[in-house]
Length: 410
Ligand SMILES: Cc1cc2nc3c(=O)[nH]c(=O)nc-3n(C[C@H](O)[C@H](O)[C@H](O)COP(=O)(O)OP(=O)(O)OC[C@H]3O[C@@H](n4cnc5c(N)ncnc54)[C@H](O)[C@@H]3O)c2cc1C
Image (cartoon, rainbow, N blue to C red):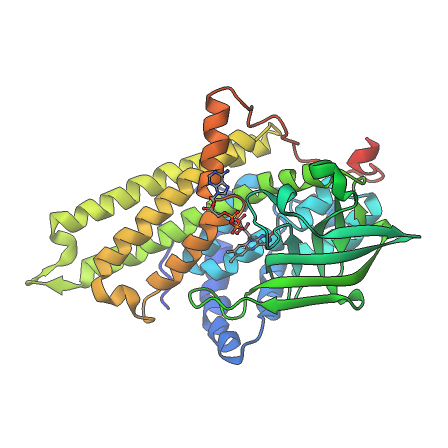
């Protein structure tokens, strides 16, 4: 696959960060990923290389191995990874945001210093396990997984669905009900180490259009034991922690959507300039130009919303409202981009020689991740109508301070 240079200029330090991604992917990740796919092997050394290049630590303080540049850097890195290889964009959620950032934001000093540095270094694989077979749009209503206190441990039973990297994960944030009769107030968050003992199984879900090695799985918990010291926050605080994690996760998901959309546009432009039909490059036909103009305008608008989201987070302001707007519009722009790219490529959109069908699979997946389009629409409309303030449950990022304790203790 050809790596097309990134399109728009960026100010420093973001231009250098994006350049780091483009160079790493051109020189190592793109040439090597096919080998892992052919062998059916999870690309741990590539995740490690991304961690070593500093791609996961931009929103983390230097005290835990991050670079503390901020959320704008996260958006730029996520977009560039997904523009080139949308499958590896998963890492920005699991190695850089929903797993380690949730631990940073809610963990004790001991939890943060033990679990965060190896995940953002790419040494340990992360996961985030909220969704259950009963449905992802209403996680509290659908949650059947339970955690029963037994001395200095909790015993977990139940199942999770669609949990990305759970077949490889060394550490994850997982939600279960400690009080099943208390609705969303009965949910508690745990830091789990899947390889720490019996009672954990992850079965890959086969998906033809997504990666054969960067998989999502059904997870089964059968008396899986977690030390009480791995509880994240207080008992009953899990729903608040999950919603906060999704707020930050929407930054990476929406920037991944912008990146995948830009990838569709880049390849479509390349093709429209060179593919000749009727003696002219197809890009010379105005109906094809109309497809290009719609893609370019929607991507630019989506990117502006994602950057506003990153700025809001960098300013420490409540970000749920702008997160929903950015996720919703980035999904729309990405759907337009892949539909128009498919039109421009004609039959070749289906050929593995070009990446359009790969982008399509990931755009469909990102459309549901961190809240589906309908869920975002409901949040946006209820906020606009004044029924429910979208920012009511926003919890700004905590800068980790030594000995700060958990949020519950603050
Ligand atoms: C490849 C992949 C990877 C994933 N990785 C993870 C992961 O790592 N961790 C994790 O926890 N989850 C993960 N998910 C789960 C994802 O977050 C859910 O798929 C998503 O939340 C939607 O849930 P659902 O698929 O159960 O759809 P459902 O909740 O069953 O919804 C089905 C449809 O109904 C619509 N709908 C639901 N409620 C309403 C409403 N009130 N009004 C209008 N329409 C509504 C939805 O928009 C959707 O179109 C992943 C999913 C996929 C496909």
